Image 1 (cartoon, rainbow, N blue to C red):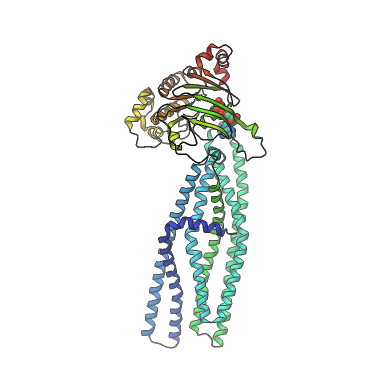
Image 2 (cartoon, rainbow, N blue to C red):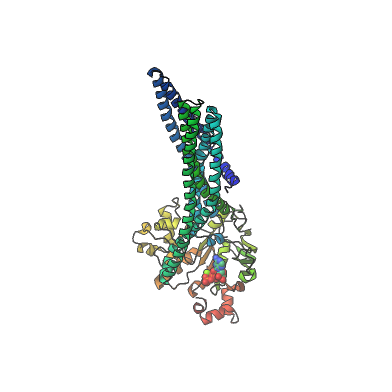
Amino acid sequence: MIPVRAYFNLLSDYLRPLRPRVALLAVVLFGTIGLQLVNPQLIKRFIDGALEGRGTSELVPIAVAFMLIAVGQQALAIWSTYLAEDIGWTATNRLRANLTDHVLHLDMGFHKGHSSGELIERIDGDVTSLSNFFSAMMIKVVGNGTLVIGILVMLWLESWIVGVSVTIFTILALGTMTGLHRIAVPRWRAVRATAAEAFGFVGEVVEGTEDITANGSAPYMEERFNDIHRRWLPQTIRGWMGWAWMWSTTIVLYGLSTSIVFILGSWLFGIGTLTIGSVYLVFHYVEMTRHPMEQIRSQMEDLQKAGAAIARVDELMAATTRLRPDGDETINAGPLRVTFDQVTFSYADGEDEESDPDDEIVLHDVTFDIAPGRVVGLLGRTGSGKSTIARLITRLYEPQSGTVMLDDVATWDAHIVDLRKRVGMVTQDVQLFRASVRDNLTFFNDQIGDEEILDAIHRLELDSWLASLPDGLDTLLESGSGGLSAGQAQLLAFTRIFLEDPGVVVLDEASSRLDPATEALIERAVDHLLEGRTGIVIAHRLGTVTRADDILILDDGRVVEFGERRTLAADPGSRFSTLLATGMEEVLA
Ligand code: ATP
Ligand code: MG
């Protein structure tokens, strides 16, 4: 079924701003239709005139008018197609932008659950089938529908018998087409779903090429790829078969209609109701319904595709973020106080009833308070929740209960852009863009000049790192890890953050071992980076820990120790001193 309401909602939302253009389109479209209806009348007059033996002085003007109208009608048709495409693309580009914006504001949980390939297919693929809906719909369904009605009116005027027969026939034909269309829609919906799955899968595999090849799971991936395609082909065949049914039915119907016209025409001519000109006129009009009926039929296909696309677009629009609406409080300048107040967090949505949410709790009632300018070393085994704490500070996720505060402003009350500017985070694996080092440092913000970048690099004592890049700031990096080692990528991320000058730096140290030269560079850069800022350093190496003022130890999502580093180190009963004694790199790495 075509969801008429959904169509209407989309139409009115996105066409309202384009009202003048839509009005112009309507005028041009109806102009074309009017001219198409007038022209056969000229042929009728011409034929009857010729048979009555009128002279060329009467016939030539009719022929000339016929040609002028035919050319004019084509010109208007081109214009209306241009207008419809223009409206279609303007409207759907707006829809694409809205969808992209919506998706970008969804939480990380959503993005972990939807591959980038799938989102591209939804935002671009589905919307492209809608653009057809906007443009072709207007011209082909509205325009052709009006044309068919106009033709029927003309036929009724010519002879009611012809009018009745052709009208009944047209209604039956449309009914048949609609019935077939209902069979074909669900088939197309299945095809689109599988297409999205296939693209999602390919996107995922391409992103993971390195790991897949290294683990020798390529044959397995190939098998899954084949699986999807084995489902996709029969579905597509069924989809197209539905279409083929509709297509062949039109041809049969058209043959029937021509026969009806000839039988009726010869009979009505025989009893003297119609002239030869009128018989030709009827034939011509019925012939003329063929094209619009076919267009309406082919539009049905696009409509069914668009119907599936609208449902999926609505579904995407309906995906809500687990984040609260953004606040608008600004966060103070300078180093910030970071407070966790009884924070409990789980990655599960809580909507998933089968799983016991208690099992999946990653942070249990975490409470701590870091004074401005202090540097805290965050320690804990792998999976204890360290990176999760970092994600909560930057509000990539929000806790199920409890509050995360920066200088007494809860993270969800803060303006999100401001928050992310004031909190700098270096993640365990830094993502790089396929772009120059300069663009990777500034996130493509060309307001930041080279002097500023070079100054930041100099102050982090990374000049030697810069010198080691073949083309300096112009060096092109690859996407992903960019052809840099984990340590080098972190150095780049430090500079990124330094340029933003945040009040809190969260440093999630790469757990891989580094060569001594890079390690020394990192140590010094971290020192500079943390000067005059609050620091949360998730450390895997002793060297990084010794710079911390305080130590916070997490175990299985609970704070098990929090205190001044020196005091803890001096207390032989503390976990920290045990860690130091056993060698933290062995325990934590
Ligand atoms: P590591 O030292 O290995 O980096 P970590 O202390 O940073 O470990 P987290 O990444 O915070 O650990 O993960 C804590 C727990 O949350 C783990 O049990 C992990 O499996 C789970 N987890 C992490 N990220 C997600 C996610 N996106 N969705 C669901 N669970 C997650
Ligand atoms: Mg981690």
